[in-house]
Length: 31
Image (cartoon, rainbow, N blue to C red):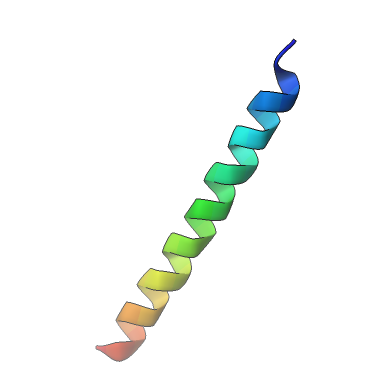
């Protein structure tokens, strides 16, 4: 039980992580 919730949390964390990578890449490209 709760496997679906855990899977969704992992997807959300991965999505946030990808957004952070994109933001960091944009900031670095501006320097």
